[in-house]
Image: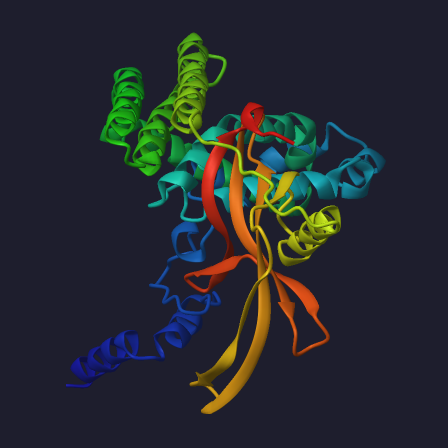
Amino acid sequence: MKIALKKYIVLLLLVSPFASIYAQINIGVKAPKGINLKKNEKPSSENTGQSTSSEQNKEGNMSKKERNEILTKHSEEDIRNITDSTKYPGYEEDIRKVDEVRAQYPYGGELSSSLNTSLIQMDLFDQHQKTLIDVKQKYATYFEVYKAKNNSSSQLELRYLDAGNKTENFKKNVSGNSYYTNPVPNIDKYIQKAMDAFQSSKKSGLDNENEIEGYLLNAKLNLAAIGVISGKSDPSYKENDKKVSDAQTKLVEMKKQAQEESVSGTLCPKDVYNGADNERFKQMTRDFWKKIFPDNKDEILAVYIVGESWNRKKGREWNKASSTYFDFDESYLEVRIITKKDDTVATIYAGDLRKNHLNNDKIDLQCTMMKGWQKVPIYVNKILIKNIKK
């Protein structure tokens, strides 16, 4: 009866919130927070968040003989110097670089659900591998002697092993992903789909830029997969990198040509206002535009006053927000602002100079509309720069 009762209490402890305490009492090892250790079980890399590589599992497990063999190769002074991290130029920077690699693979080397994030991870993989190789070569003796002296790995080696484990798992996940089984045919397929989508857009007049960019992204992902699996120095990577780059350049040229064709018939606005203050109002328009859109760095190529004269409006209107009537007496002079889009195409925007007769004829520029919650300029059309008449 006593034996049965004892087994029942032990079982109860194992499944209760006191299980970790029970484990500590029984095996003398402090259980990490949130981890229940079984009898005779040591904290493993799986339940402590450390690397699971075979190299990592050797950390701290050198035999006394192995340690002595390493340490006897060096004098005590040499050992002090070898294991002193301050003796290594760029030590802190190397830790930062290794941590950058670790941070790039936050889920132990799993592929991100975001295609754009996956592209960044795969594109940087070759560089990350080089970083780890450089660290290993630079600190090989430091890692060995430090471990022999302290019977545990240094912080840099722990980070290095974790980064190596993550990149190794990442490479396995990429090479084992069916999406990247045939990267070269996939690259050809998606480049062709991007070209077809552009031609379709040109015929229909519909904007399918997102579809085209989606196909190019898939081509880049398959290219990056070659870089992960075979390395960027592999001939296949170099050949297909040029293929993708050439396709992007060709699409840019095709888009530019199509855009030029579509706006070739756009006529340049004409100055209609003949007042003596024509140039002053044009400069005011430029100054107002820059204040209204301070982040818009597009060059203002020209300003036209297309209104023949000031158009005056006065009256009284109801304001819903304040539930009151308000009087207005304003004059408007219509203008057009042309800004540079690229080397061949410019954009025409609309606006009105407004003169407030109830406020000492103060002038401002009305040239925005709401797009969602954002104020944007009032778009009119695009025009070839060569067709602008100044």
